[in-house]
Length: 166
Image 1 (cartoon, one colour):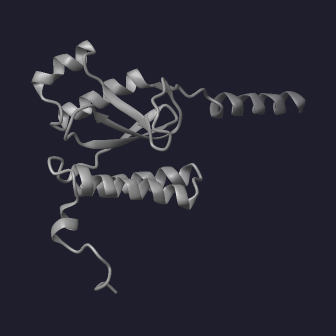
Image 2: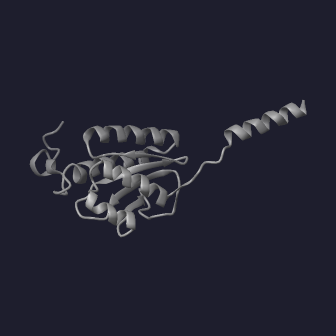
Image 3: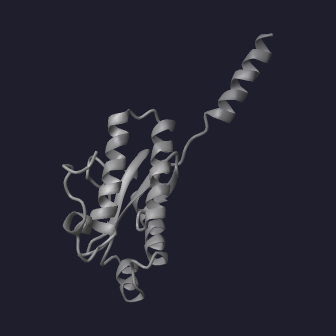
């Protein structure tokens, strides 16, 4: 009976306690570079600078705003180090990544769903989840929707106060 119990315990540990590969920022940067090229954010003339290391993509923690070599599970912001570039987010979870493409309204909708799913899976409290979603919506409207303007044009030309809202 003891042998069977030990065998079951070892089998469960071997199948469910697998080591998760950590993602380092250099490996993730290559994936993000491919995304930015496909998304049309990096032009062919700039590509050599990125490949040679003259330019890099900034990857910073959502809350810590610091760059780390080994990335833990969480949400990170990434962008090019140049004026009028769009900002994006990436979820790093258990050795995998999900790029949150908030350059379009459809992308924003999908990104919000992915963040809510991530927060549910990781039991992240409502205040932090709300901050994730708020910043993504703000980034979409203030930066990504009109990168050359750098402002939310709805605040300039649309409804900007609550006095006439229900």
